[in-house]
Image (cartoon, rainbow, N blue to C red; front, top):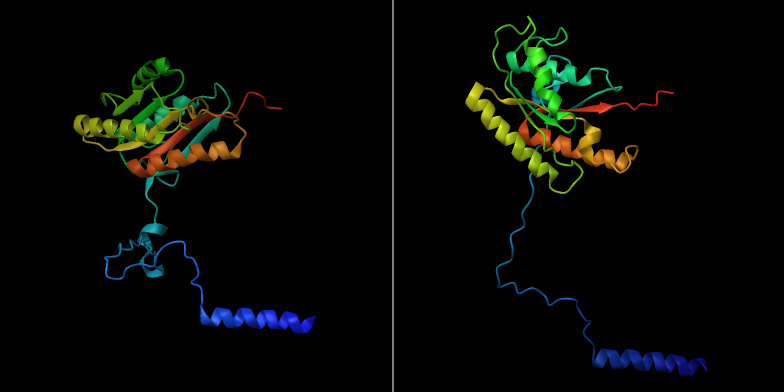
Length: 231
């Protein structure tokens, strides 16, 4: 009955008080006499309201059009002249001439990653530098590669940074200029998308381009197509 149940409970409590059991632990307690590993605290800079002049005064590659560092897109339909536009931009940045009526604020060289139609690059450069507007400016601080890594593949960022460092060293040696512009033409050819409409895949590629810009201090421009179906 009830009295027997309470007697059993009381007997258990008395036995536990006389001979308590230690609880199991997942790991032994630390030996305080041994040296403990130091805790590394990651420092994150704080921006204060009275010290934010650099944040509210952005640096420009082309004044009030293109930032000095970051990622930009030049998009349009097939045969709309996107590559000629970006090559003209590279020319203006290379010689310090205004682009589309806006002042070039940072003169520098260009690394062009030709993921498609790489054979057309020297022909188009010859056309741009043969114009009267180019005059006798001489060779442009411009280099290009044909072996463009698949941006969405593992290790692509490291390879792209290595290409950029080689180009930057060449710009400094040949022209005494920094690497100011990196162009990927086209993003569709270089990205390795399984589904161009998948936002997650596009974000992976954009993250790589942002890290490339951060590592090099250059503006990274991706040239891309809108698509052939305009309906």
